[in-house]
Structures are given as structure tokens and as C-alpha cells.
Picture 1 (cartoon, rainbow, N blue to C red):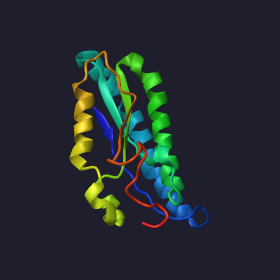
Picture 2 (tube, helix red, strand yellow; picture 1 turned 45 degrees about the horizontal axis):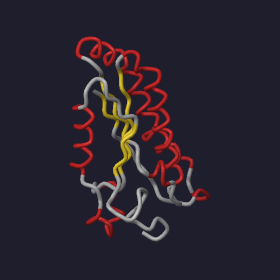
Picture 3 (tube, rainbow, N blue to C red; picture 1 turned 135 degrees about the vertical axis):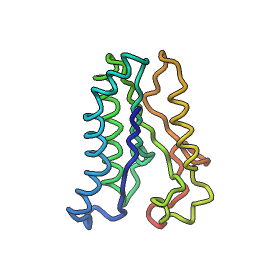
Length: 166
């Protein structure tokens, strides 16, 4: 199993996003996941041949679907991670490697501390961990291409945060 769960996001309008901030988000949110996946394919393939399907979980974000203002680069890198997951599964599934994109909404972690006004409504880290356990418990005949976790609210893409005025 490989779980790619790294990311960083800065909130700023597109016109003020620096190249340094852009490169950091591209590197941590996409490039690291790609490189780790590429580096582990041989091991994942060998494990799948011996024990049944290997699982790769790329932790993306609900913003890959929401695309809110002021987080354009973060949203774009997390959408790219979803696309990578889909393409990688198409490429690697014949070798027994299942690649799932996990899209949690706001998770109560240090990375979401800037949205402290919504802390009481955020998804817990335990919810995210439980979703990974779920993926590991499915039968070899079952594949979950994408798993979305949202906060309770009036709609599927509901966010407890006003992105423009947190």
C-alpha cells in the first residue's frame, strides 16, 4: 500500500501568487505524489502478484471539485492528483495495482487552522483514516476510483468556510 498524503496550500488571488509559492504547491501537492508512485510501482506490482491487489491512495481534496476562489493553485494541483489517479489506475490495474483518489473536505488538522471558525464542523482525521481502512477491506473484485468525504451541510460540495472571507 502507498498513501500519498502531503500537501500545502496558500490562499491568495492569482495576481499576487509568487513563483516561489506556485512552485512549492506544484512540488508538494503533485510532483511528490507522482515520484513516490513511480518509485514504488515495482514493489506494488510484486506485492500484488503474491498477495492480491495493491492499493494506492492519493489524498486529494474536495477543492478539486469545488474550485473556490483564492486557492486556484491548490485546487488545480489537487485536481491534477485526481487525474493522475485515474490514469495511473488505467495503466497499472492490469498488474493488480488499484489507484484511488480520496477527496476529503475540510479536515480538522493543523493545515486547516486558518479556518478555525469552522473547526466544530470539520471532518476528523479519524474519518479520513477510516476511509483508507474501508478501501483495504473491500474484496479484490471491488475498486473505488474516487472517494469523496464532505462535511455535513446543505449540499455535496458544501463548505463550512466562506472562501472569500474566512
